Amino acid sequence: VRGGSRVLARNVSVVFSRPEARTEQAALLPVSEASLLNVTRGFQTSAVSRDIDTAAKFIGAGAATVGVAGSGAGIGTVFGSLIIGYARNPSLKQQLFSYAILGFALSEAMGLFCLMVAFLILFAM
Image (cartoon, rainbow, N blue to C red; front, side, top):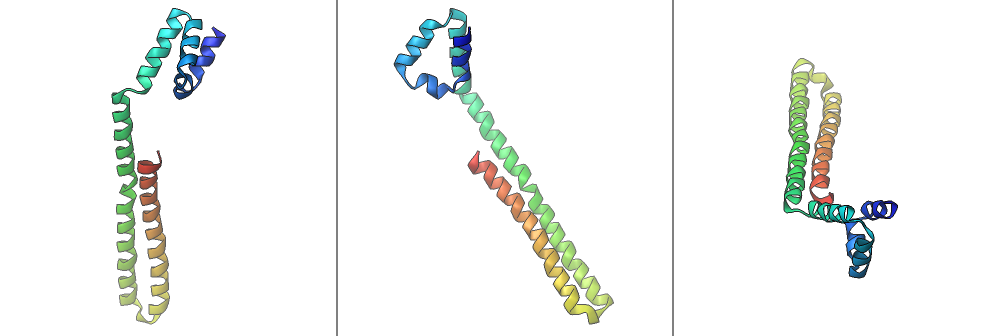
């Protein structure tokens, strides 16, 4: 049983990369564990599981890009408040503009972080 559990704990590519190792290990295993090993191998490489993984990637990337819309709303709020500030006190024009640029940069950075996470989900996983 201990030898069989070690075989099950290994990666599938390690166990099945050498045909001589596969026949030796399968001969040492009892019938029930050998059949379990074949079922596990079939489950890990099935087309359905690959399709589910691909769908999960696309759903995760789509959910990560929702933050870009929040960034756009934040930028609109920043410049809308800038215009209201100009209308209320035109003498603070330079100071209000510097604060608006800072708010724009922070909002845009959050949108870019969301986009970066979406690309990481799509292409790095």
